[in-house]
Amino acid sequence: MADPKKQEKDFTPEVDALLPITTSLAQSGKLTEALDKLFVLEKQTRNASDLPSTTRLAKSAVEQCYTARDYSQLNSTVSILSKKHGQLKGVVQAIVEQSMGWLPEIKEKDGLEKWLELVETLRVVTEGKIFLETPRARVSLALAHHHESLSKTPTPTSPPVKESLQTACDLLTDLQVETYSSMERREKTEFILEQMRLLVALARIKDAEVAGKEAKDKLGGGEPEWVKARVNGRKVNETFLKEKVNEDLKLKFYDLMIQQALQQSAYLDVAKYYEKVWDTPSIKEDESKGRAALEHIVYYVVLAPHNNEQSDMLHHLFVNPALVKLEIHYNLVKCFVTRELMRWPGIESIYGPFLRTTPVFSSDKQWEDLHTRVIEHNIRVVSQYYTRITLARLTTLLDLTREQTEETLARLVVSSTIWARVDRPSGIVNFRSKRSAEDVMNDWSSDMQKLLGLVEKTWMGMNAAQAAQSRVKA
Image (cartoon, rainbow, N blue to C red; front, side, top):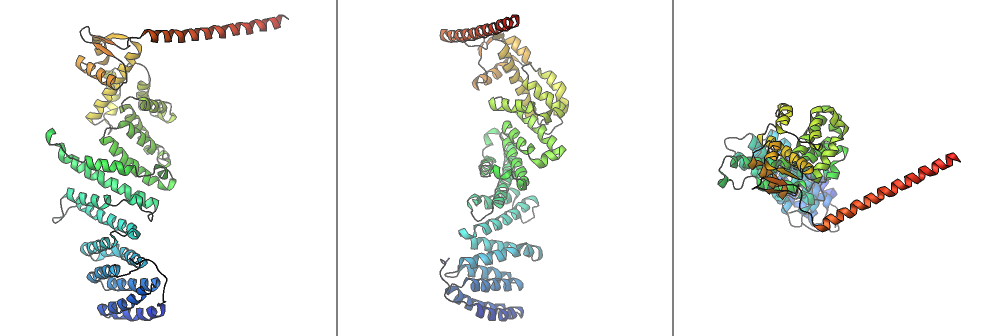
């Protein structure tokens, strides 16, 4: 492309005189002759850096090819004009945008083959040109949607479903739209979400392929696509999604993020994403959608492994006034925030009939995860009220076998959730570590300071009372 330089001459009169003649020639079937005349004058205007006149001539040449429905000549003309020596950037941009405007009509009236030919021509013309990065992205998106449609409704001649979807993903992931300065922020976000959506769809297909294989053959799968989707998720500005006009993008984004988090069993992240959804005004205004979002927050926050962040979120959820309206969910959360044992048979009989009908707990894996969280909660409660307990008694309280109890204890100790030591020969679990003399003295010193503080406070109170009585007697 030529660098912009000063216009040497204005060819407007010559262009005004030539365009009616070439249009008449094209309409009479002499398209080649009309193009030759346009190209002769176009060379002069291009060498003189007359951008308006060159643009008019180039657009007229392309339009006459389209009007004559000569798509072979149209593709050739677009390609030739873009490769002319010293061609002006504005001219190439104008004919590309003009040709893109015809794509929907060509696809509808002249068939998919002609549409694909023009799309491929535009992709070749726009390749490697920064000033055409946005048109290239739009054309690539349209082509990706075409390949995706082949995966949904395959034809006898179309590639396999996985291959079609792979092609669609490759077309979009090759484009780093987050670096495009010419693309609007909303369109950029929509593009990234489309990248994520196609990657998730392809990952699910690959995961399904390896699901039935033996463990030693389960290499690959859709993990690379899941990773790419997570990386793309970091490119989305969540502050931008908070704007009222972008609520549709916000809901689509968090839906994709929920799918990724569930794939990793990152239940706390899922709860956070549902909380973002629940905070959306349009969701809160719709009672059924707001209720569903709040229910999912409850499900996934209780499924999440215990840590400071999960505990904080659980307690904030418990005091949320909206949760009181959901009696079963409120009581379930209450069980986890109360320092009391939850016997699994009781939880299963009270909440099981309802929870097992929900999409979340219809999965055996997530139901078993809930069982695990109940056991972990019970062990934390026992560790707070007992310094030592026999393994047999602990096994009874947890409704587990001895092996399951030891395994759960070991996991919680490794994760630093509790401190415990198991004396297996004697069958005793210690929940308090041996204290050094320094620790005992520090505790004694702290207790003495508290005691002296109480004595001083009491003494000051007695003095105040005596002074009040003396004033009354006086």
